[in-house]
Every structure is written in structure tokens, then in C-alpha cells.
Image (cartoon, rainbow, N blue to C red; front, side, top):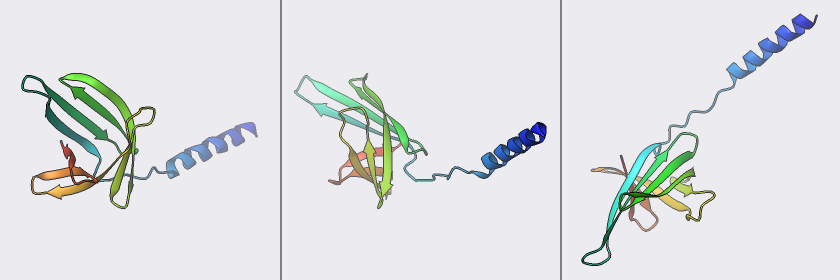
Length: 123
């Protein structure tokens, strides 16, 4: 009797795990986005920054920031989409949340901030 109950329990677990499906996330923001900036501080001093956001389908991602070709920030982020606006949050850091929209242009896809400034380009 114990063998029969054990067999039924194993079959039940296998059936339950095969029937549950993780919903597929095909959001168009998924992928790698980047932005490079050059800031002129003075005639002799310039600062460059290079940012990369990698969005994945689990509403998580990785953010990397390089200043003058040296890693300055490397952290994880979470993202949510609501009404075609994406909010990016960096838990555990002092980085502010950012809200962007995905725009398709003749030159490719861009993320824009609330002021209409380009936030990042599709890689």
C-alpha cells in the first residue's frame, strides 16, 4: 500500500509540474540598450560616460555605468510596464527611479524620458 501511495504521489507531482506554465514575456523592451555621453567640463577636461541596461523577461535587468572607461556602477534593476511607460527601479541603491517610453524611429528604437530626451538606444 505504501508503494502505491508513493507512486501516486510521484505521478501527481510530475503532472502538476508539467501542467503549470510560466507566462511568456515578449515585451519589446527586452534586450540590451545603451547610451554614450561626452561632457566637456573645461577646455582641457572632458568626461565620457557609457551606460548599458540589459532587460530580461523576468522583469529584472543589469545596469552598468562606466565613467572615463572605468566601471562606476554595476547593479541590478527591476522594471514594470504600465500604460506604455516603463519604470526602472534600482533597489538597494541611491539611484532614482526612471520612467521611459519606447519609441520607434527611422533610425531604430529609442527609450525617451518624460522630457522627450533620449534615454538609451537599442543595441
